[in-house]
Amino acid sequence: MEKIIILDFGSQYTQLIARRVRELNVYCEIHPCTKCPELDDSVRGVILSGSPFSVRDERAPKPDLSAFKGKLPLLGVCYGAQYLAQAFGGEVQPSASREYGRAMLTVGDAGDRLMQGLPATTQVWMSHGDTITRIPDNYRVVASTADVRVAAYRIEGEPTWAIQFHPEVYHSTDGTQLLKNFVVGICGCAQSWTPDSFVESTVQSLREKLGDDKVVLGLSGGVDSTVAAVLLHRAIGKNLYCIFVDSGLLRKNEFDDVLESYKGMGLNVKGVKAHERFFGDLAGVSDPERKRKIIGRDFVEVFNDEAQRIRDVKWLAQGTIYPDVIESMSVNGPSATIKSHHNVGGLPEKMHLSIVEPLRLLFKDEVRRVGRALGIDPQLIGRHPFPGPGLAIRILGAVTPEKVEILQNVDKIYIDALRREGLYDQVWQAGAILLPVQSVGVMGDERTYESCVALRAVTSTDGMTADWVHLPYKFLADLSNEIINKVRGVNRVVYDISSKPPATIEWE
Image: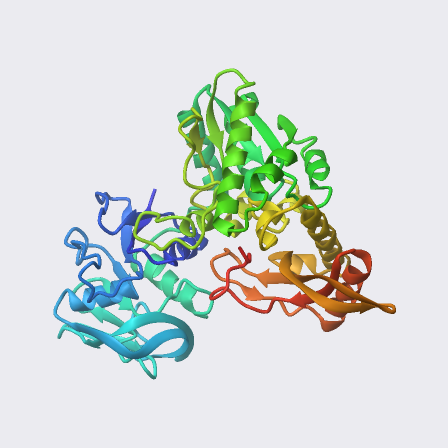
């Protein structure tokens, strides 16, 4: 199977490059920049990612590119472009100011293979503190911006290109075309990697890996765990045991609704009520990372308790996807940690189960496409993402049953209103946040001093970047009125209009 190799220098956007390549129906693999795999005939090209490092930093990665530079098509992105310049006779210097955000790219050589089909000017996304001030003699500039002369270049005499912007993010309006020019036009990939082929190869791989072993899976009702369950069920059938835990931190009535939704799918699902355990362990804990770790630990321990009731279980399956991984730990490189997730990072030593993660290399929209290929109910596939730690990370500060009840009621009104007004499918993720502040209000002739809730709604395709949704003013006004009137304990509603970056989608 043909593939593109992506060498990861630690950028938060490395997995987005992979996602864009896969959107072109081309398989790709990410490897650490310090450990390039042996290249066989299946490798059609190599992409060098961005990095949080400066190429001038002594600690910056300085890989040996001799195995493929000049031999295979090569594309350097951001740090990759700067490294290809500095390491081979050019010069990189600090920018007068950090170049971050949108910029207009002017194509200088419309006949260049990487630039084919791009308009004369196009919007791109910059994210670097250094800039290339001088390039070697055999390097040719093919595109520039007002502030960055060497925004894109090629090396004469070899199939090597480099760009100082990020084509993988949606802010680069013609980024997909540029990547197609490289992956399809220059590398010659046939675009044969599809959701159907992923299902086929993954099911086969799971059969080989798991054999006749028993697997326990934690279901949440969300897209990820559902798709993971159906993939595993196709691979091992009755040897899959699904457990759905009621942590007390789910949406209102979600425990019963989720169990009902899995009826008729052929899955062996057991519901476990464990809310008292979670509330007890979370009592008085306000630090968001501690809350995540406690919830993750309790989930795992509940699974362990239930797994012990099933003889000879050897595997714990999880619906971990790429955004969970990239934001939780260094994945194949020195990427920065944003936050931890309860389904990332392994199991406690006392739990004698191995982990299987069939979706670990997929983004959310890819998971949905795979779910459609599996024939899963469109209503399940279309559900908004919901955080693994549940409402605990939408309650800022300590978690109590009373706060959860308030937030459940607010959340239900919000989600029901989005569905009623036909807005639900226009939003990638929506939720309410209970803030740790109280404010003065007036109801009737009485003064109130009650909680404030923030409403959040974003559009995204992968969770790595997101923009806030411009919900209609009348909808927000009516929704605010309904929440305040129907939910005791809330007297003020605000709407979050921050995008990611710089904010995250969840508040904790």
